[in-house]
Image 1: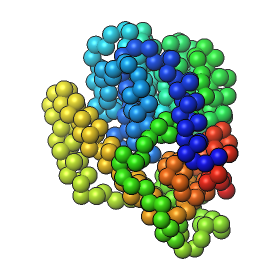
Image 2 (image 1 turned 30 degrees about the vertical axis):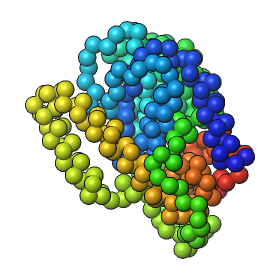
Image 3 (image 1 turned 90 degrees about the vertical axis):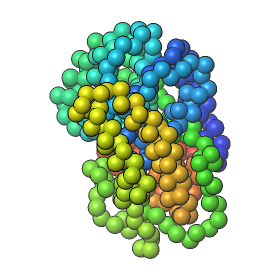
Length: 319
């Protein structure tokens, strides 16, 4: 299947699974206010998906800018998808549970997530937690996570849904380079999800090695914006002026988000072939028509996602 056909198919699956569930105005929370462009791609894809609806976003925020205020019971909470359901990246999951506890009467949808736990006691704690919050719908973005959620959270509705990044229209942010560059990328993540630190024999010796550019270095445009956000954080957290957080949300939404997507396109445009340990470098490269070889992360996330959705995609293979 071509990448264009695959994108349309995955979008239709997302629509079929989620459109009828979003039946009221909503709050969209846990936005990714950090340097991982992959999570920003999920944010953008979710934003485009939600534009199809007649309902309005009443409030959006990241975990660092959220502040507790009165939200009507009929308001639906939508929580960001990604790869952080469990205890490997505890911050996002803890925030997710905090929102569910603060608004126990509101319906909640957790957008497509990969599940991974390192400690059995945390699984037991979450089994108890979600058994007491049956108004939470969980979306798994691969078959392994789907099976886990069904087994451990039987009182919650569980859906199998592709990653929301497939709703992105890259053409709105920059021109995709279809000309040959004769360059290869080894997209090697630099965090604890890296499976090993040995140069794989199948990657060409002349391949360039990079993680997301926003993780590798701080561009001046972000340094200046970070300075402003730092002062706003001071007034919000030290001085207690929580309403200032709304300015940070606006800066994140209207400056960082589009700039990160433009950086993604510029980054991937340099290469013909991508060997990737990062799922969303692989997803973005595939959507842009590049030849992609997907390598696994430390706990099987990438291969499970490939096995669920991408086996018939002609420009993506696993190694």
